[in-house]
Amino acid sequence: MRRLSFLVILLGCLVSLCSMTCEGDDYERGRDSDYEPITLDRTNFDNSIRFGVSNPMEQAGKIYVYKQWIFISDLNKGFHVYDNTNPETPVLKSFIEVPGATDMAIRNDIVYINQAVDLVAIQVDPNKSEVKVLKRIQSVFPTKKSPDGFIYGMKTDKKVVVDWVKK
Image (cartoon, rainbow, N blue to C red; front, side):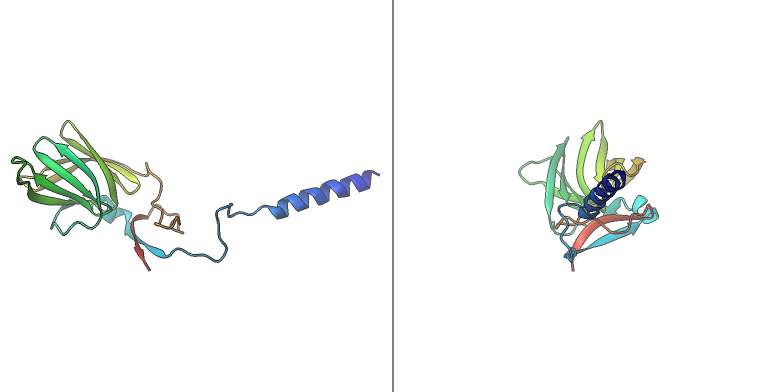
């Protein structure tokens, strides 16, 4: 009788273990992402914030007005900076390249940026095209997912996903 109880319990444990999967409920077998990651190695990523050439906006995000400046986020690319001294005709002043940037806030002349997985505090002078990184807190935010919900397969501190492109 004891042996039978042991076998029943063992069989129950085996059945419950076999019914579990490591992937989770949302995983579709055989399906891969339609996107591939754009990554930067950590050293280049940490030194990637700079003034650059303003290209046409691809994917406008948040608009932030501070003093006479308008900052418009170009998702995962950076921020277009406009001089709004004359609200009738704002003038494009510069573009701040911030790969992986999705959001920003400004307080006391300090710009706080969500840059991929990091939180970065910078000081900007659009008149002189100067940007100074004051502080970077690494790995505050989760890794960027692809537009179809996948996460970059290699977990490493040496590479950072800054965007995704269609395969």
